[in-house]
Amino acid sequence: MKLRYLFLLLLSWGATAAAQTLEECQQAAERNYPLIRQYDLIRQTADLTVANIQRGWLPQISASAQATYQSDVTSWPSEMRALMNQMGVDLKGLRKDQYRVGIDVQQSLYDGGAIRSQKEVARRQADVQTAETEANIYNVRARVNEMYFALLLTDEQIRLNRDLQKLLEGNEQKLQTMFRHGTAAEGDYKSVRAERLSAVQRLTDLEAQRQTLARMLSVFCGIEVKAAQKPIPDSPPALPCREGAECSELQSSPFAKVTAPSLQGRAGGGSVGGDSSHPTLLAFDAQQRLTDAQERALDAALKPRLSLFASGFYGYPGYNLFEDMMRHRWSLNGMIGARLSWNIGALYTRKQDKAKLQVQRQLTETSRDVFLFNNRLERLQEDENIQRYRRLMADDEEIISLRRSVRRSAESKLAHGIIDVNELVKEINAENAAQVQKSIHEIEMLREIHKLKLTTNN
Image (tube, one colour):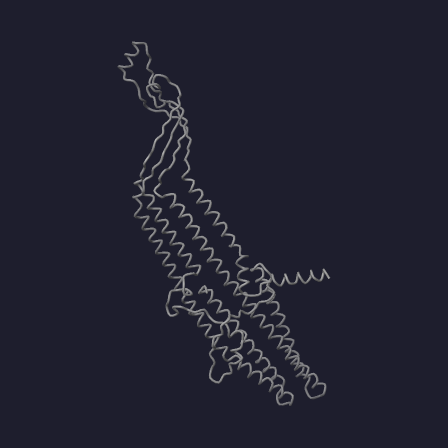
């Protein structure tokens, strides 16, 4: 009993883990896509960069050591040296070889907003990278859609192939009975049997295709995809029917409930899905905010800096030159103070830097306009495709009904010896082809609707 319960639990867990709907596959594919790891890497890089910039407020300490040899040094006047020599005092003067080992400390008090602007630029750069990653991951959904709807179409073709085999097998059995009773030729029986075996071969090929598609989709999503479910939105639209066509079956079909996203500005509007939430547009917005932050950093570079400093060294000569001119020895020396600096050199390139940022803005806006232009064309094409498939689907049910009626009539005629078996096989294949076309129209319309949803980010 416990083993049976465990077995049922494992089965239910496996059914839950397998993605069945398109949305589940899309979400699983986004989680499984290797690029998803880039989000955390971008965040870590931004945090480290901002932390390093923030350390600009810490005291800046530098150590140095130098040894020099000078062509001339400060010395006593010759008259004074002569006078002091007469008094028995030897004034050596400074030596030409000089040495020092020191430490300099500087503490910034005011930087004109340079550190703040640098941190903002670092964050905006991370925002741009994140937005570009989001746009790339968004394209993963399109790849999932292609495989998912290909799997749906293959499933429909397998179902219709099995229906065809049942139909052929039924006629094959009838012809076999008729052949045994001498009312049908052996060639008629063999012809239908050969057609059924051909359908079996096509089924083998379709099942191999389905296995490949399911495996590819499972690997791409990172979970096992056992079966694909047709998307069924809520509100059913009124599908167009031609005059005299029977559309009751079409209106009751699950595919009649599929509605296309609304197209605002269909004739020439620039919006995507009525707003600017498309990941690609958000990437353009992030790029513009980065440019604004870089411009503020240029303004901060022109402001003065105020800092405290302390400097100390051990060496020769020190600050007391008179003492060092009389005694050649190393000494400790120190200095503290405040410094106000203003880098006027930033004005040399300010105009060109501003012009470069303006060009960057124009490039971003041009890229945005190109995207909106292409996006608008894609929306128009996809919407027209949806309308085209709807118009085709308006006649599919009637065509199938007529083909089914003709096939049944052919079966009756064959039973009475009016036509040969080739005519019956022709009508059976025609009915199956009409059913396949209906499935293709349904799946292709669904595919176009979900392409339109991706295009409009709806």
